[in-house]
Image 1 (cartoon, rainbow, N blue to C red):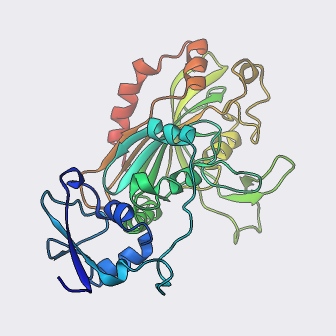
Image 2: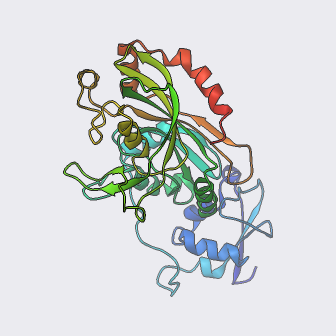
Length: 342
């Protein structure tokens, strides 16, 4: 054995462990970024073969560790990160585990709960992005958001587990190759019962925070093209409707603004006049918008990711109060989604 290279056998209880997690246990001073450099240069190997951070250690295998990765802190390795990682409470860790709908080596899909911000902002300390970042020990890398949901929108949220998956998924969303289906309860009954909304949107600040509105003449430069397909699944007389929404584009507040523009705001929407009716107040004035289903090509070329999120409790209760039965209609509605290429 040379002084520069150490070959460490994989213990029985370490078989199947990710290489980056193995390093975190045996060489905690080696940060993920520095480990990636060692892997790219071939200095760290598994069974004498090049490996990736996500490589699973084989039974009775060996890990080649160069001397530079074994140096004690303070010996001049500027690339090794020694700062304390962000912390996550036991409550938040349990929350993340409880909302995972699908997970593999490349992605994790969660059912985002009502009222939880996806990212931090002014005055927002607790958010999904921060919780995921603090669980590197669980995921092996810092998970990366590839799309967003509003704080009060619930449902399917896709997160990449590593940089390469994030880049590929980002391109997929940009090319509109992801089929997204939302469920919403709206005021009144749209006519026709099925249609398309095309209305360019511009950002507009107001007393109730950022929102968007329909663009006006002369605002072409800042206008964002936006298209939404809608379909009425069921209705409550002429008072309210349960609708399926399929956005072609992905603008901020697109679905909320579009439904308000055609005179049928989403119930409980305090930015787009969906909370001003008696029926909305009776249902609790919570936003009734749910990212129901996502179908998207897998970033690693595997079978398509196809995930459906169960309804949040407030929407279940509201639909029961209105006499709507999601179990009865869900199967037919989702069969229609399978034929959609939007």
